[in-house]
Amino acid sequence: MKVDDPGILIWMIKITAYALVVIAQYRMISRVATGRLKAVVLSWLGWSMLMGISVVAQLQADAWVWDWNLFSVLLSATGCLLIGITGFWTGNYSRGKGDVLCLVAGLACMGVFFLFTDPWITTVLAILADLLVAIPMLERAFRDPAGHRTDAWPIVLLAWTLTATSILFNFSWLHMLWPLYLIGFTGLMTYLSFFRAASSERRA
Image 1 (tube, one colour):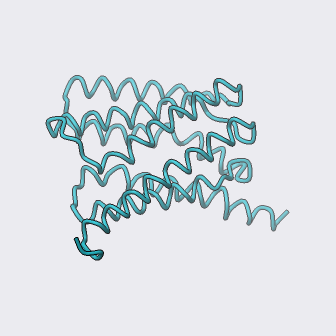
Image 2 (cartoon, helix red, strand yellow):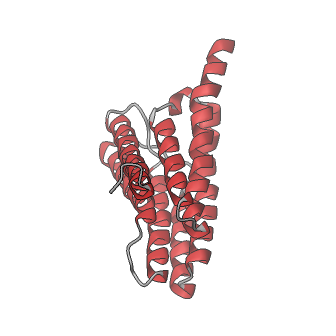
Image 3 (spheres, one colour):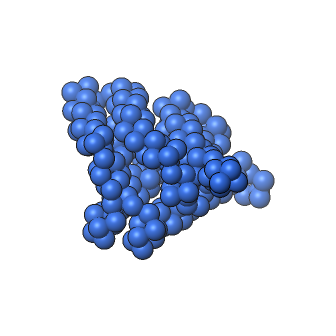
């Protein structure tokens, strides 16, 4: 097999993306475990549920044939679960009035999946629900950008950019939905926690 074989290039991109997702999750878990960051537990658990049910819906639609394009989403779902558990276990978590919406949205998405078992409906609703329940975190990052600064955000932004790039070689809009959404979300969190924080510090 040639070194410049497109298949090898695609796998190198995928594996790099997987590794970056794991590194970003480790960095986030480490910050929560040491008290440098408070996890919004219900949000992280809800995000895990939303991403997990989306993976299940897409696998079921393909007759349970595994697709490596879903692995980054599965890793992220697992990471969200571990971050939430870490925050709860260590007591380093925060609660807000809107946080319960995340679990409600996750349960609603599960209900939609069991009613329709349609991967498009489930995935789109999961992403919309994810965006809805991400609003409290975005608001907190806007008010206190330095308090939400972690290198996990730019790392995972790069990971999802690489994931989207690998999907371009065997394009599927269904598989591209989560990467595109997460590029936007992590990009915004990176901007708020790094660039806006730096701007605020200069003004101060």
